Structures are given as C-alpha cells and as structure tokens.
Length: 59
Image 1 (tube, rainbow, N blue to C red):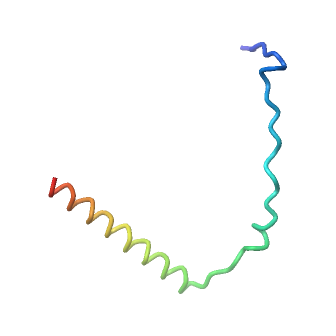
Image 2: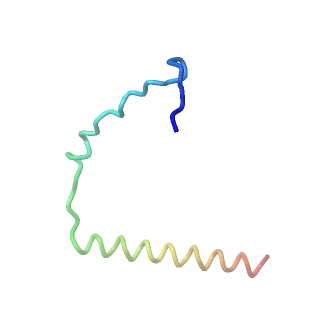
C-alpha cells in the first residue's frame, strides 16, 4: 500500500553523531565488583518491594 507524500511533508533527519567516547570509556570489572553491584541491586529491589507492600497494608 503506497502513500503519496509531498516533499514538504518529508523531514530530513541527520544521523546521530558517532559516539567515539564509548569505545574509550570501556572498563573491565572484577568478579568482586560485579558481585557487589549485584548484591546492592538485589538489596535495593527487595527494600523497594517491602516498602511497596507496607504501603498496600497501610492504605
């Protein structure tokens, strides 16, 4: 199914700039670093769930 378009209706969008900084900012993480982040994330999630559950009980 073709749609007719006027040139005025078509926008030309420049491509996003290349992000060369991404390649330079890569860092390797030790297993200990990743374990700490994982545990902190799980702790945060469990605390949020407990907090949400307590609001349901209060309300």
